[in-house]
Length: 155
Image (tube, rainbow, N blue to C red; front, side):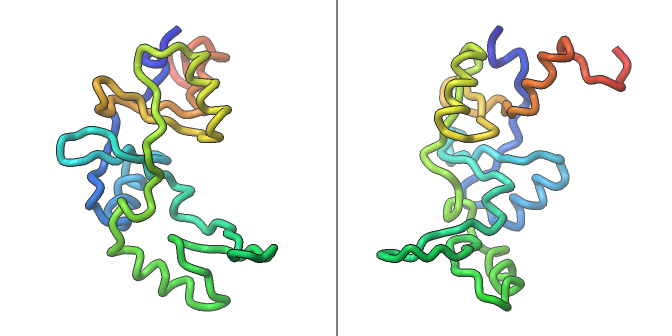
């Protein structure tokens, strides 16, 4: 079985100069958890996921202490709203994961699983000739257990 058989297509993408607010609005409107990021030539250059919008723990250099960060900024006890306000104008290129980790549509499911396990990513863009054509998520692998159909739906 090939990746193209389980991927979600077409890929919903954003340009690297898109704002985080525009990316978030797209993700919410389309009910998706990631967006491949493309350059002016429509080639994939990165990916932004819903995890990029949440706080992460980051270590303080030369210290064992770890504190939360949002969009690369230390999270103060108060003031998270101000960080999100400033982030609305931040461009996707500033927080996206790069280089993009992706699979080809003709890759096997074994290759997909190996790449997901090796990277720890839950979603991967699917490309053809370096341009996104779909996205595959761990969730999509559940359909294999259901014979390709979604329980509770006709068909």
